[in-house]
Amino acid sequence: MPCFLQGLTMGLAYVAPIGVQNLFVIHAALNQPRRRALATALVVVFFDVSLALACFFGVGAVMEAFPAVGRVVLLVGSVMVLAIGIGLLGTKEQQPDQAAEAPPPTSLAKTASTAFVVTWCNPQALIDGTMMLGAFRATLPGDQAAAFIGGVALASCLWFTGVTLVLSLFRRKFTSKVMVWINRLCGAVILVYGGKLLWSFLAGLF
Image 1 (tube, rainbow, N blue to C red):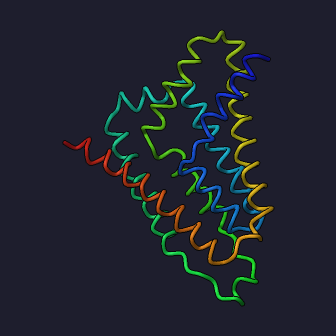
Image 2: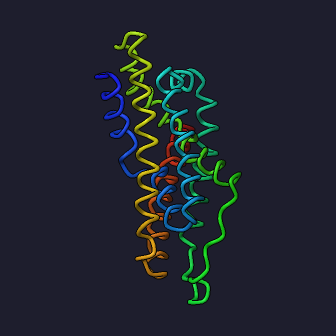
């Protein structure tokens, strides 16, 4: 049990800081019907847990061994993250008759592809995750490793679904104008992340 709790607390510390994943989940919770927002959260959980497993077993070392693969992922990821941010910055305020309507749900395929991009298309996240989770893997016996990574996986599930439920319950308290500015703020922060990824790609060329 101590290893499971250690994995749970480490997992919460790993996913809680605001990043592209969290902004994506927040945007879905505030703009999509609750069932679709929860579906989005579960898709993000799937990719986040798969990333944690990959980091736990050292896929970051593969990225370091094949720099060209890392550069391709970095370029594609930065462009797609920038596109997401630009889209959010272009959010417009709804008219009163439009605000009364439920927003059209995003297709599950688009949700999954975007969740994959914001989770996996960041080689630095793979390498950093490997350094953190991989370091724990090296110190744990085989029978304790499963409990630890199980705690990490549960943390991801609790965090993303919890954030979605809380925000979706209170989203009706936000006016249309506030929602526009929340979306634009999320877009601006995502643009910063995308810019950092693109800068990392360009810096790697020289």
